[in-house]
Image (cartoon, rainbow, N blue to C red; front, top):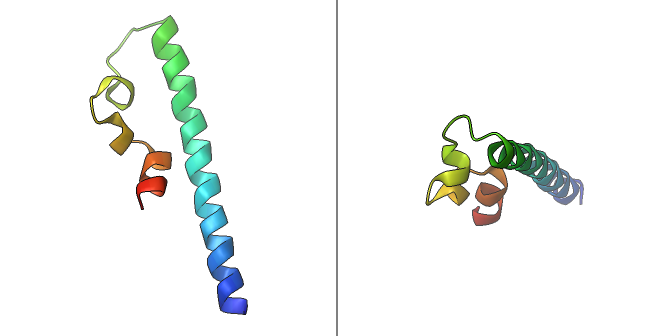
Length: 60
């Protein structure tokens, strides 16, 4: 049972990190929309979903 709980805790921890990274990415999206001072591959790249930690978590 303890092993299962550890697996669940790790999964939740990984999800929390991925969601936090997604929110940081969202801040960069808003900045890019408002300023557009530099190229943002994580936003403008055709396969940018592969650069996102949340997308990696979902695909994993």
